Length: 534
Image (cartoon, rainbow, N blue to C red; front, side):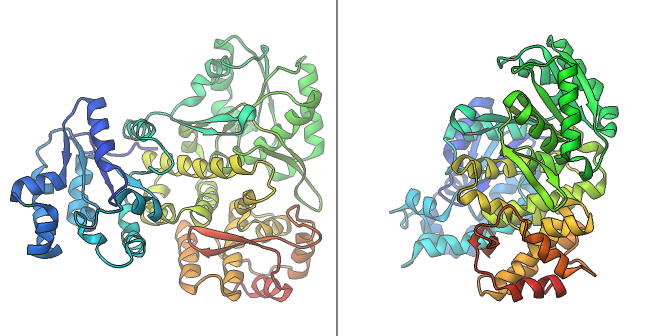
């Protein structure tokens, strides 16, 4: 996996809408790095001896953009800087390419309502806010610019972070260092650590917890061959006595029978209530290990060390642990939070292409349910994602975990909003159970089918349905299931654990970035999309 290429200057470029904090964050970054700070709008005013509003008034936006382009190109002298640009500077492709050559491009974002509150009363100095409805103007410009902003290396929502937090995050991304995301669940809260080569520091990080020395690593043979020794070496160096058990690969191993084998291994290793168990692998290993940890001695500590994209962005976060039943996936389980999630990004190097693409279904899901800008980022950077560009994958994992951590912190046990994480899963899980296809492939189909149902209900426009379907197609994921046993699939859906009072709950999109929970979907709509996919 190659690291993100940077320009020779190695600087940081902040792009984004007005009011997102580019100047204040940029000044703080430059001070921390000991490099000059440049605000392109300030340079334009110095160059013309004229204020930005006056330039817009006298030369129009076209004239202003021409001067802006000259200023940006004049910075291509190789000096390392932190640069904050005007909100529309990157609409010119030439400008974006030049800025990209300066270093890491970071998109600072914020919701339209936050931007309006931050810029209220600034219409006189912010010409693009002039008009009777500035909120709608902001939203319109955000929609227009989203595909361009989505080309940035990383994105930070400054409405969710302090200036200091934002500076720390930007420095981490620009330096390809670790990111730490907190799942805020009070006493049960934990950190998600994301970065390169994290497995080498597993043992030392575990020493910050009150644990006894006997540890069990649960993995499958392929992962054991690649990362087993590295993991146990880290544990031994930190003073642990690790044992390792290999579970054969495949969803069928996520069973009570294999949970029983893990209990045997824990007993054989003389583990106690403070002995840690480490799930080293993908979603199956994480779910099975977490279930065994939750139920052995009424609960022992466990650490998630996910090695697949699917597990890093979804399965390892949130505390859902389970085994399957013959009638459906994850029907026997618990809510049991890990002590730590350690996403070592280098493990994605060994992931087969098909599994990488399948994991992208869950990443795309986050864009649909919570972040239209993130969805646009995926659209714009898909080629780099599939080439396994380090920086882009790091952002995908971090932003996905941020979204999931926020949802889980507000609804740990899925009494309300957490259900939105199941977008595409009601039909997707049933399709997975009936066909045996990879989880992500079935969820991709489930998302398209859910979007088609939303379209039939008048919730979602056809253009958005097509946009989702096209992104999945480009990712290499299926959008429909041929020769599906429709009656059997509907019967399997009746055992879905998300049903309440015998009524199936569907997560349906209103638009890209927003979904609703519905339990009133007519049966004929479900049967129609399962039959035809339309």
